[in-house]
Image (cartoon, rainbow, N blue to C red; front, side, top):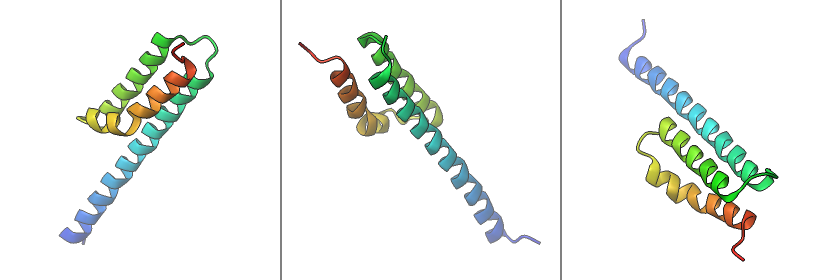
Length: 89
């Protein structure tokens, strides 16, 4: 018979595993998006910005109410990639 403590820890373990899967998926999305910005030959500035917005949207789907967190962690990376790819001249 499973007692309440064991049940609690099993549920917690499952939640942590699901959270880790979401984190891995988000990391993949960020890496793929940045790679596309840096490497896509036919990309223009507007499309690069759309890639950023799509990655941000996926992050908020995976982690609701995470817009500010996304901006704090990733916005600078994306804008740096966009500025390197499309320098102001």
